Length: 386
Image (cartoon, rainbow, N blue to C red; front, side, top):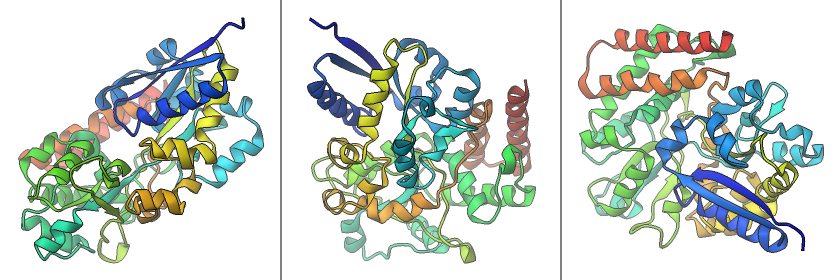
């Protein structure tokens, strides 16, 4: 009897992140009876905070955020997929990426993961409540503020989402914060973005400062007080029958002045393989299976996943099942901002949202907030140069 190959993977504990890969693993092992794939899950906060170098010692398969790409390239803890996957396959992934999802896992010449999941902050709303309350769907920033003054708007207000929204406001209004991986946004624009965020969040309930996107969607889909979320990382699950009490409709975000619609900050996840895996070839084959167009359009998305392959986003049947989630949000994905990925960047990301959230909650001096952010960035760069 041939000895069974066992692979262990780690992902995050939401239907989008867990059920989707369990389903692909189940089908893969049915096709390959001598392979067993076991997925474990961790909380969304642990997903953001856990050191990847420790996880790579314990697991063969890792679902990761793309800001880890630089560290992975520098440390060698993840398999360089360009050395194990044929060029035609990778080219297909590149040709069919959603926004910059595929390229987000490439740092230098190293590809550390396959983009199996794509996301960016998008707008969402309760269509039934807009009709009930005779409200218009906001199209501009001023419309959004007006709806927020009517106490109908909620959004995530925890540090990481607040920081990503700060990026969004700067980039949308014409300034790249980190051109060439340096601090490049002007003080004038940064302070303006901080003021805009504070004005909007203070028109929302104070509870939002403890809410992540999932909490926002759970609230929006079960309560009738709020009708609209202007930007939160999209979860197609809430646009599907049976997932929550009320279906949400997702679409593009409001426009700011003459700058056009908001350019939010790319998220999503990639499937990576630990360099210490005892069965790299099998793990690579499973990763290719999961990221393939056919599986992304079927098993993956049918089991709660939010695919990284463009073919699924434009698929008529996929959109029929998800209240047009993918077609409705694709323009926002395609223009999404790709944040830095250099080694050390996550030190900045882990800390820089805290003073913004504090400022949104309690006010104070915006310049002091900006100075703290610059200090965190300088420390991150120093780690990189070290």
